[in-house]
Length: 420
Image (spheres, rainbow, N blue to C red):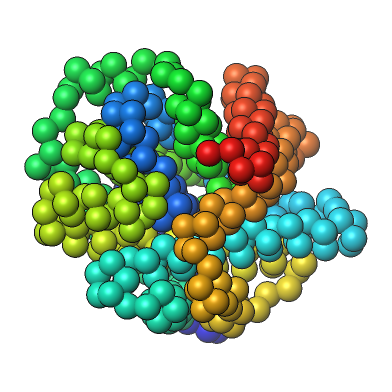
């Protein structure tokens, strides 16, 4: 028996005893939550705060509420059925359908990886003035080490590493608030949904529409199932679902707090500053307003974000391939393959911010393929049995699905049409 299999067996054997302690059941949602604090979110949040102050705080609060529901449904699907979302899709689609579904999901995974590697490379350029290509290679090599932990040690140690990186991300992006005087009246007013002009509508759509990441939906169903094992014991499933709700709430509270902190930091310290629509520009503005120490901490947070998110993205890609094609390749080999497009983009000198924007377009196109089956499967008694969604949860999932899809279609149209 290999070491990961042995570790998984030990985890399952200890499950009833460990389940008495809630903290032992936490972890899968923290891995999925990395998708919500990836480099692609940084510029949008800082731009919103710098240009419009506290006006759009409510957008991030709403976005986080949507993320909580979506990620809980994904974890619930894996726990109740013992199958990941890609596996359920693979079981129900004909061969041609599985191949086409995998192709679009793989493009989404590649776009995700492109954004994360570029974000990490930008962080290394900010911190050490390294060329972007060299930074991309370093990010790729370090992510291989992180994935090696998962391959050799199992999921639990990998979760510990990701949680540690999430802590670094949180410190990196929240530290500036300690020396930024906030207008708490303005913060409270920012919780009231409203817009100022057409540009704020577009910015809000961008912030909300980019909340749900397809790879996080696919992955979380697998993470929850693999961590807790497959069971038909209804009482145990209920206990695990309670723990999963806490897992999702805590993890996404942290991720949401990071995003809101970025907006508040910009609103308090960067009002009216130009250039925050790029990560490099935002870093320069933060350094100029709050000093080099805060700038360095911000860069470290961005680097941790890139490293964690690209590792999780590669993990998600392997889950998608295994579920839809019933083919599994070593994570490290997959890391090498998926790293190539990002290095090509960095090597030929494509503008990194532009590449990030285009990657988000591909992510937007993949969202319906993950959200629709998630909402449908969790609402079917034939799949979920006694744990089928309530009418209220089914309605919420339907509204979220329609809202996010419409917003992302609008964003794709605006991006391709060149609308600022």
